[in-house]
Length: 298
Length: 311
Image (cartoon, rainbow over all chains, first blue to last red; front, side, top):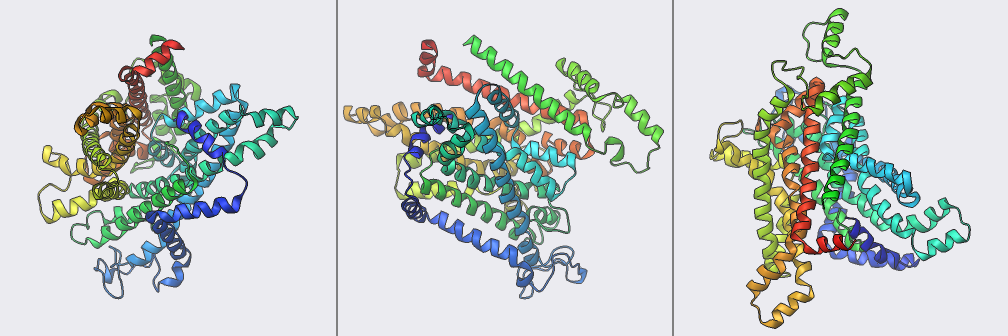
């Protein structure tokens, strides 16, 4: 893992400050990947649906109407209705909200925490690095879903606590990346020169170390989103994420519970949405990796 | 080598210690407790106090932790609150076979299928076969196991009736969970295998082998695969404990009585001893697998041993 990161460092270090040319080149490489383009389109589309959901449907996600319960797809309910007679399409649309919030919020917060700790550990070294490394080891000792599951259970299940727990587990990857990178960069000649000129440590970190980490960090951010989407669906499926009546695809799948055998529309649509979303974000992350020429295995 | 293993063991011990403190403190500092959950009749303060005294929950936190730690070192993980007639270690021992069977078989399926597909797609790189396999790997890898479980159960169990839809009762009950759990992972395995193979295929010794007149099959099995195996083993071995712990979702879809299901149940009931026990057991299992992987790495790759001697 560390060898892969240090191998990537020279490739990143070659980047010249001709940002316009770099962006154009990145976009050209990104465009070549069809799955990445699909991912980008899907993310734009689903974000629009999530924001505009109230204007796109005549129904609400929590209006119970037992007289039309468990109807298959029809013109008035394109995805059918659930056990309480709520419109499935409406619930599917509203459920894009927790998916996007969890996906972006946890990765962004994890990125900030991970970068800070990684720079501190990698650049300062010594006791700080030791402490950061132990913390990383602690959070790598168990698969993230166990830690998240346990924390959400202890803190009581809710969207807020799910985000908190996922943030606490998602900083590890960006921390590893940044730590490895600042560790190797701090020994490079130009950093040595900057230090000799008397430039304070924080300036060296901001102007010389962090810019090199941007492509890697962007990719870590993008690559973490599919995991977060999966986590939100999985934990809501186990009844530990979004609380009813707020809909979530995982929770809708759990609701399909005893009825899916006879009313397949109850599991088909949430299943399809979860899979499509993971696929789209995965494609987007792969495309970004190719576009930015990042070479890592985490 | 011995010093290395010893150092690693110390590292594992330290990590487990930190993890146990983290889990322990988190479980006891938040409001609520086992006496508040699942109780039909509200308990009097005296009853709560009696419960706390019985399990030592009235002592200061650090004392509780030290008592737990002392017992845990002798493999005595306490008694689950929800099942006082059995010890935590015993209950783990009773539940482990289900998770180990489902996770182990699923990991075997994922590795067998993934490696075969990965080798095929690397050997025929940039042909239609490679494209089809890569497409399969990307798509199958994005399907969560619980979604896959529903889809398989609907078609193969509910519609065709070939397999039972859930529960436990023999090999036939295992087929669907194992496939649903293993197939998505095979995608990642195939991608990784392909990458390892292609890296080995691009090296000088492969060109030399071809130049010597070695046939493709010989080059592939004796030169490429042998070298590609090293990064593959280090990546695939941790799949076994990883998939044992990850069977939470699939156990819940198919109603299997494994460790994952009990972990969720115990967390809901705030069954501290059980949660702590399962957490520590899993962490130990995973840490040991990584250690074995690293030792194996030194055994199968002579270069690592030489580098170590030189150092």
